[in-house]
Length: 376
Image (cartoon, rainbow, N blue to C red; front, side):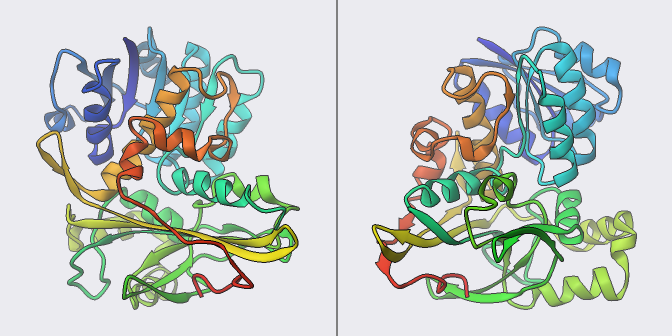
């Protein structure tokens, strides 16, 4: 049984604990500085809790003793310090961050490391990069790679047509920071909340716009190999305009703590959500211009006698599957590991990755001359 330190006893940490502990193959030590947060953690002989201050190096080192890996479900700004402690303690490191700067810091720490450093193990970045890389690998040359993801309320009721489903810090971060993209074959940064588009899926209309971090490392991996590569967050129509007014016109982007207070005071949490995943790749194969797409929805559903949200399931399944592949030696055991280095088939065959496979993705047949139509 491998001992795991999980930092963060929030909504995602709770789900990760349940997934790992019920296998019988992992003993999970849940660390958080807020002792009250442990009340939501399911107790068992394979779960323990420990007060850990993730901003304190000595506290981290102490908590990591005897652990195979540390999983960070903490705010992104704490991850570089957690990664530094993991390297010193000789633990493998995995996180869920969408933050570009934090990932660069983790990549720097991975140099000459004897353990694996695997950031961005959730949904987006994470699973979305694995899907996009799999589709891209089926082409002789690439034209466009479009990645779209949204965690949405199943029953939107407010003007934003949105409910909180995951980290508010992460949400504001991706709405405010520059976004990586490949445009005309050149890797560059594009502004958040821009390049809005509309599309329909299963008879429902959505909007999508630039947000930061969702590409993960795929922009660097495919730079020089694709004409256009971008990631956009999916919302119901009208959401982007309100958020842009709040963040840019009212300048709340300059006061993220205030924006967080407003969101968490006014926007309720929901467990009734749907996660939408939509990837479209076009390019040439055997001399023909073709397109292939992957589209699926993952809804909130019951696991182990409890109801869990779609974003809890998809995010937690992502990091748990990567941990499992690491523990079984299926992926690199040291250095920096990119999500796109992981085989989609191997991921979906994993006991945690099957949570995605069970959602029955709709993968369209490739059709000639169809490039550029998806997500427009």
